[in-house]
Image 1 (tube, rainbow, N blue to C red):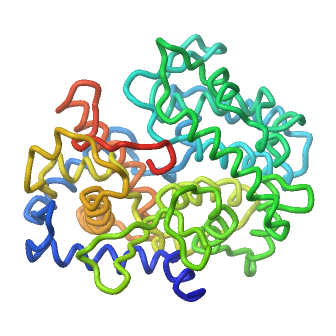
Image 2 (spheres, helix red, strand yellow):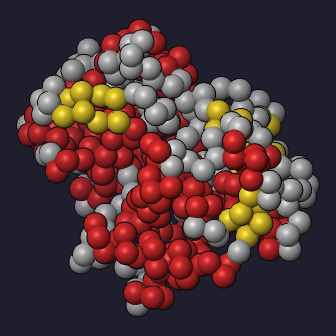
Amino acid sequence: MTNRVEYLRSPTAIRERCNELFELAQADQLPYFRVDLTQLDAVADYVIAVIREHYPDLDVPFHSRWRHFEVGNIPRVRQLEQAIESRSKIEQAKAKFDLVIPSVLLDAGAGDCWKYHEATTQKTWARSEGLAIASFDAFCQGAFSKHPYQADATALKQITPEQIGAFFQVGSENPLVGLEGRSALLQKLGQTIEQSPDLFGDVPRPGNLVNYLIGHADQGQLSAVVVLNAVLIGLGEIWSGRLSIEGVNLGDVWKHSSLSGDQLIPFHKLSQWLTYSLLEPLQDLGLKIIDLDQMTGLPEYRNGGLCLDLGLLQLKDPKLAEIPHAADSELIVEWRALTVCLLDRIAATIRKKLGLTPESLPLVKVLQGGTWTAGRKIAAALRPGGTPPIQISSDGTVF
């Protein structure tokens, strides 16, 4: 069973299990979706146009939380770096881990109504950017530790929905989806990092994971898969109400009746996005990140919405788009699995059209340039408020 858990935590398992559903889709043997690969070229062209619009020189950064901190071309991260510049390089990286780990966990869909007013710029932000800036401000104001520009288990365990609501400006006129789930997730983060001193230190804080990862580098190189594995092992217990094997929480792993064997299919969307968000502080320490394309695309509603809105995926019963679906429903599981496989194919087609390699345009850059931005763009063009083509009932811990 331990080997089964290790397998389900691997990017290999994500691709293999998703591909099993993808092959069924190509044979039109899935209950909810069919695939139309004749649209692949057109989708790749659409994404390339979006990439050229935002990154004309094709110098695309990683798809990570750090992009959201940069919204509006405001140098927030530079301001943070100035505030902690007296610290050692490793301590600066730890501070960035302390910021980005809670911020990613707080990023699940905010809903259509919530907004955040940024006091320093007098600008108002919504969705992922708003959540990013709200969590950035909360971190800088000491929400996650009694020490400035830090997060630690003691403070995280004591976070309440009321505190999150206050920092995120939540009120009757400004509701935030999943407020209870977000605060519970931070409390679980505090509790969980206490249980792994080998990963998070004897005085536990998220940033101490830097020490562990430096220790697992080989001649200045660090595999992205090693980072993901540390995230999945170290933070696996924070996800409540998930499937488990012999008491081990599997996290973002679900069931689909069309799959063989135990019918389990892993995605690890938030954990992979968190991994992508941890890589840049590690690069700042001089580490070379390898195995980037062993990671997978992120199966969430922007990437999945792009595939659906541009016809790569088709919902067999369009009426199902009119009602919300739970994250564990087979329709959503199917949608996510096919998205993972299509993102690989979109990336390969884009590289071929641009004459680039997986090394020069890895999947993490295709997502940023890229499919996530294109998914948001087509959604805005097709539906008021840019809502996804399929509605998801989220508790604030999956998407």
